Image (tube, rainbow, N blue to C red; front, side, top):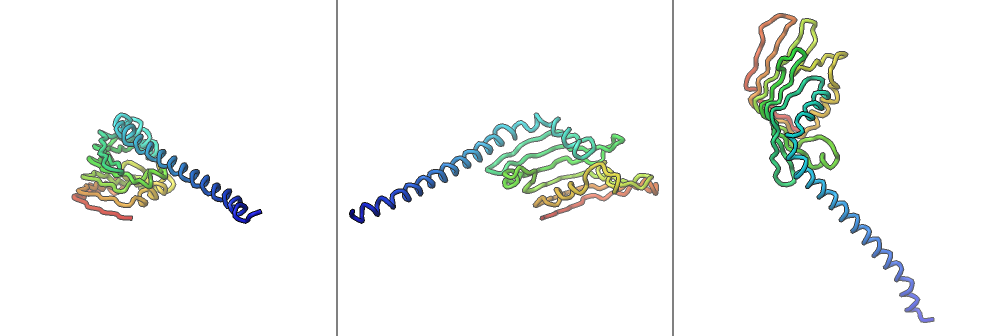
Length: 202
């Protein structure tokens, strides 16, 4: 039997196997790309344009997570390129007495694409303008920040989880904030800090 036909018969199945695996890999790549494109189109054309319609649900979920009532005046979306961004206006957190403990007139947030792919709420940048924050110590010595009780053993939220989320954000910028310190335990007059600027980069 000639050696050449035998050699061809041995090599042909290996070549065909490599071709099959190449087609499978290409099919998987196209499938993943199609899923990513569909998710991007869904986010930009269906979810983000309807964020303001879902504002009551967002307020309710944020209130349950923080343990304090949350109000959002309006949500607008500014989407350009691959990175979606939105603006929240007149965000208000109230304390248990119904008083205004935190007001954020304008919050600009740009979502992080890697975080979206990992299904995590993470922002490429958070920009907060003209925030109004109250820090209070009541007559029992308990501390309240933005209406949330933060003393150890009496927290209304998981302060550790909230701090972890806060510090994993790549960039946080606060401009023109006003911080009001109220000490009810000492019955001292409120102290107010104005034009507070803060930049945190992870």
